[in-house]
Structure formats: C-alpha cells, structure tokens
Length: 272
Ligand SMILES: [Zn+2]
Image 1 (cartoon, rainbow, N blue to C red):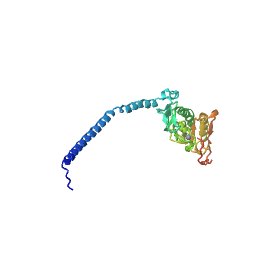
Image 2 (cartoon, rainbow, N blue to C red):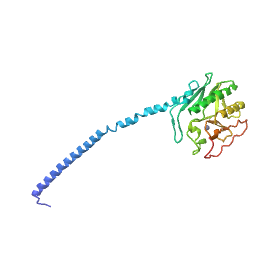
Image 3 (cartoon, rainbow, N blue to C red):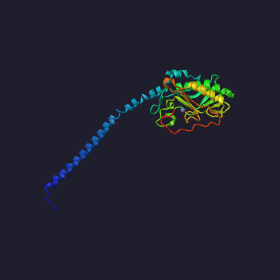
Image 4 (tube, protein in one colour):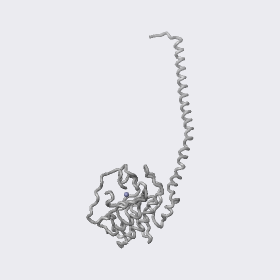
C-alpha cells in the first residue's frame, strides 16, 4: 500500500538514525561499563590473593610442631637410642576417639649386649606403650629365648595402632589398639631362623609358661587362647587403665591336642 508519507519519511528516517546512534552509544556504554567492571574486578583480585598465603603461612610451623612434641615428653627422653630404634611420629589424627599424641614407630629394640631385635613390621605405638614393649623384649622375651641357645632376632607385630572397636566389631567400645596402646604378637624369631609361636601347643611349654607369667605381670590386659575365641592364634597385650587397678590375664598355655575355644557369634560389647 502506497502511503503518502512525504515529510514523515524524513522524520522516520531521522528517528531511525537517532535509534541507530543511541544503540551504538548504548553498545559502547555497555562495553565500557563491562570493561570498567571487569577492570574494577581485576583491580580487586589482588586484595583477596594475599589471604591464602596468610592462611598457608601457619601450616609449616603446625606440621613442624606436630613432628616435634616428642622432645618435651618425659617418655621420649627415656626412650633413648640406646634402648630402641623408635623415631617420633606426628600425632595420630584418627576418626572419633582415635587421636594419639606422643607417638613413635618402634622398629627395633637394643638388648644390653647390643643385639638388635627387630619389630616386624615396625609398630605404631604411643610412647608410653612402646616403652613397655621395649622393657618386655629386653627383660622378658630375650631372657626367655636363651633356653633355645640362640639369641632373639625379631618379634612379630600382628597388629598395633588400629582405629576400631574391640575384636573389630563395629559399635563396640574402642579397642586399646585405637589408642596405640596395644600390640598383638603371634611369634618370636630366633637368630637361627626358627619361629616360636606363643600360642602353639607344640611349642616349648616351659617357654610359653614363663612368657605368660612375666607378660601378665607387666601388662594390665593379656588375652590369648581360651580368653574369648578371638585370640587363639596370637597374644594381645595392652596397658588399659581400669578402676581399682584391675588386671586381666587370660591366656591358657595349652597342651597338644587341646581344643581351641570356638569363635563366639559377634556381639556388641566383646572383650578387647
Ligand atoms: Zn589386640
């Protein structure tokens, strides 16, 4: 349809030009606005940047202090290189209650005659418990194996620090293993290479009787065959603190042919 627009045409065209100009201006403004914002944002970036550095700065001293609590510990001072190879470890940060400070990795015990008795594999233990193990090896195990005519070479570490419930039962009271205050031992090895299992009815009975007696005198908990069915093939020792100084010594030194106690069904409050 032909519309006689005449002067309107000029007006409309003028409007179109104005709109184009405005659009261009808006686009420019938008661009510069964005660029300005971007620039402003870019200018603001350096401000938060120093923060991570400031947060990160305390970390090295924290790690260093975690590795160096030992020198201040009386136990650490007693557990010298003359007695054991037991470097200090950072504090154990486990889930729940499994946090332990003053921790060592007990790799070996030095006997008085400078015989090195390895702990295989090295055991992660709290210093006070490692100290008790060192004394046990030096004063109880090493003298007991002299009857075999060969020096003690190593002590088996079946389990040491382990954040778990007693007898690995979920929900059970925290085991002393979770406090790095327990060790499970299956056997000892002599320099001749022979292995003596502490719970083997075929192993020398006098030796097992002697070790049982001294072990129960040293530790507050000793569990072996006949205790609860979970310790038929190893001996558990710990230094659990009990009301009234109560001690637990449950280790039957069996004769060959004696039957093992059948494993009980899982229960929530079993022994350690
Ligand atoms: Zn145990």
